[in-house]
Length: 71
Image 1 (tube, helix red, strand yellow):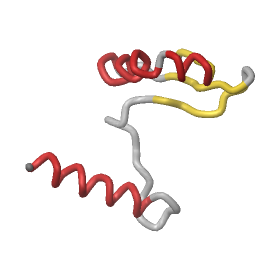
Image 2: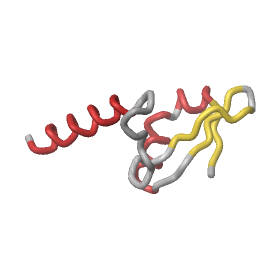
Image 3: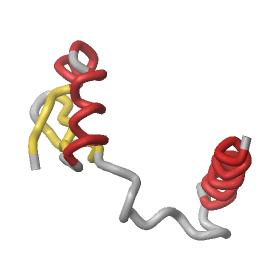
Image 4: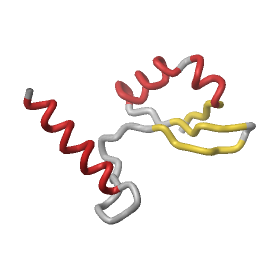
């Protein structure tokens, strides 16, 4: 898994997101050298379940995505 700092992420966001999307690359995002987040493809990533703090938001986004996809 590749590492990138927040400053580099800001400067190269489009390129990094493109690699995530096209090549399924995952990044560890660091702040002052310490890992703070992981950026990776949504496909194959388990999403929060209903009843968890973010579960309802994910369900809403999934539903809206399906509606937009139909249009």
